[in-house]
Length: 79
Image 1 (cartoon, one colour):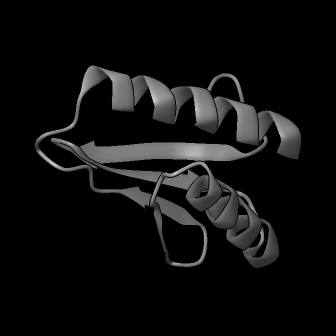
Image 2 (image 1 turned 45 degrees about the horizontal axis):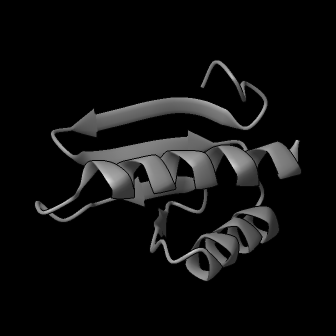
């Protein structure tokens, strides 16, 4: 949120379920979702602009690192 204040408005969550509220339009969020899928990461988009993350309980540190680096890389391209 601090690194991408123009794109990420708020992050909410409970446990491992997270909702990342973005300021992206529908077209941009769909492109982002497809880019994540190409990187091997499945995300869900709800309410048109919220990236919902529901990782499995077997999530590894490597998978978290992969998500964070991919997320950073993809958002950097959108700024």
